[in-house]
Amino acid sequence: ERENDDISQAAKRLARYWEVRLNLFGPDRCFLPMRLDGAMRDEARNLASRRIFQVLPVKDTAGRAILYGVPSRRNFREYTMEQEIMAVWYLLETCIEDPEVRGRGVVFVADGRNMQRKHYSRRLKGLAWLMKSVMPVRIRGFHFCYPSRVAYYVLRPVLISLLGREFRLRFKMHFGSQDKVLRDLEGYCLPKDRLPIELGGTVVLDMDMWMKARRDLEGLKSSAIFDRSVITEEASSSSAGAAGPSSKRLRISENGMVSTRSTPSPSASQIEPAKETAKGKGKPKGRKPDPRMTKAAEAKMKDPTLSLRDALILGGFVFNA
Image (cartoon, rainbow, N blue to C red; front, top):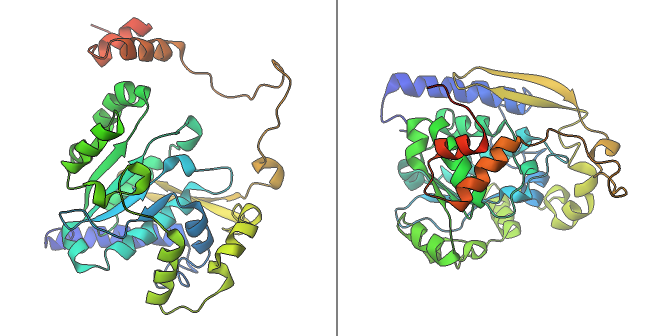
């Protein structure tokens, strides 16, 4: 159905699906049912406590499921990108249990406020490839709301140029005041009564109730692993080691090649945030931003009519004629 009855393409997608699922979940969980007590048995706590992605209890006006994300809740010191991919995998599988969603697809809506460099990962490209080429679901749109000025005026043109045609047509950034963003979203079948309160809509999100509904639907008994009080008490000590003594790093390339490598889980000393030091001493090490890019961003923000090329030239970049 995802490939419009093209048997050849459907077979290729099915092969990719099981190849990636095997590498991601491992041989001990890969072939278990995609349930909280099956393939997700070691990830239920992360899914419930992180709340980076949630399925809205309503669909858009076109009948598509809505997956809402808050990237600023990411903390890669405490869990891996692979665990986030597993959570998204499970959520998408729950969406396509609905026959209408299988036909109409899913839309992503993300809140870009408070995002910082630490909330990004190079492996996010693998998540996009997963949704496009692996999962048996149609991604009908990706709406990134309230990006920063730099993200909108500088990064957006670069990102759009890197995306494939299919994603480029479906990726939208909504910049401006709340009223403007809500008006924009309404034009994409997302009026206020289909959006969460956090974005200015009217839909109340309750992850605990959603998890309870999933337990009931899957016929699970109340268990401590899904108990919210246990989650809040143990999250800090167990989230980093949820994948066991070693965790798999999933590497996905755009041509469908998948590989993993085992890496030791971070120790407590590695995941503790750096302590504050005296001014001018003990500054954290890291790659310094390119001053040319900083100047280009400032020029673009001062004059939004500048083309990306002109802004980069003003920043100091040199292009061959």
